[in-house]
Image 1 (spheres, chains in turn brown, green):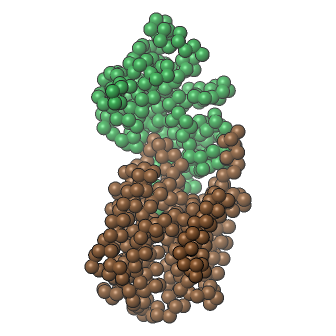
Image 2 (cartoon, helix red, strand yellow):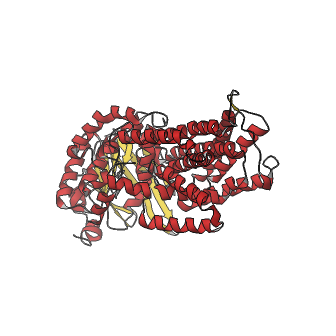
Image 3 (cartoon, helix red, strand yellow):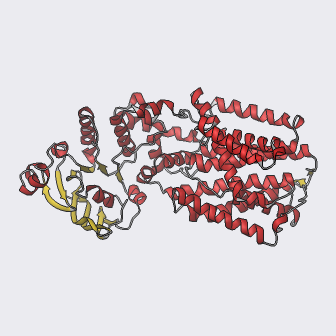
Length: 325
Length: 249
């Protein structure tokens, strides 16, 4: 009986292949909203939200669909931000190439760390990812090119494809919109691909997936690398927005923040991480006057969120509407 | 008759405890072979050794003449030897159709394609529906697997296994925890799928396997006590004493 109750409560399955109409509508409305947004709110703030939305969505690919809790995603986010800032400032690359350099570096880093971390499960997996992320943090603190405590400052915004100046906030905004929205759509595709289907099977029942003949470790490594790359794309883009990459981006608290965003919004949902990221960034922005109290307020909201919406805001919404979101 | 799966001198020691001791097994092709024994006899350990979920301390395992002792579980699955689990091994959050498709997808490749739409998976739908029909789950096709009653979950598990077109099935207590109706349903299913396949099943309850299996091996305290047809082993005094007499339920 207890089991039956659980099945009625759980979120529904996606039945039809391809993108359901509801998702198409939400993505269209989101895009339309984002196109007009910079004319109503401060563009830099909006860009920050988008970067974190991509970061949380990338993290959710690993946690929500791969079933792997990484506690070191700051390494890819921050690492890519340093590489992109360095590429733009020292090598003088154009913004799009700098961002790609950052994402690629995060991918390589993810492949290396992931290949070691996936040998362990559960809490040990999380600890291994944290340990490596701390190593990346200390490299960022000590290495020459990262500028230690100062970070890499006054990164030039450059010209897109060497043609269009991104010095203007609105121009930059649309570059960031294309990168992050494209990134989120790519993540959507990964989740709804043949690969994504196997990934869900592994998350649901790993021994069974093995007994069907799947090399689960290869799938885990691929999803880890993809997640790290997309987290890197977010971090690299952020460094172009703020013209800065600093220790904050590689600090362990950044790894914690992305967990918070994903859980608050709803892990394993498509739109949850976006909602979670928007909420946390907005909160940090508007509560900034409270100083150190921000973290306390965040903590309280998180506790309430977990108690009231155990599956996250979008997770609960999805259950009410009986539609996957 | 040809031998499908063979184990020689199979031994598994856990720290200071021998769970399986020098077990020799030969499973003939195309037969239903049952491995039975009371609780703690080492059936499940033995089963996990044969399916490579555990690595034996000593001994060799060959499948179709090939040494599989050092292989990984996913590798032997690809050789056509597929196992089931004691708890029903399904993917609860996927639909019945998707469960079966996951198996079909593996044998056809493309499973690493993360850049393609899952729309391409619909080409497996017709085939998946055939397997679903075969186990009598037609009207549950689009249901969440978790919502199925227990016996149906086992049926789904079998449909998924069949979708791999395995030559050999290893079933871990397929009737555990089932009511009489479900036991009948699954027995029939096993008999049907064993038509052109080899089946090795682990069972706790002798009466369940009595008329289902061609050969029965009785394990007790990690060692083989008797082997033969039901008629043969049920007359063996050791078996009556250690197994039937002791736990006659």
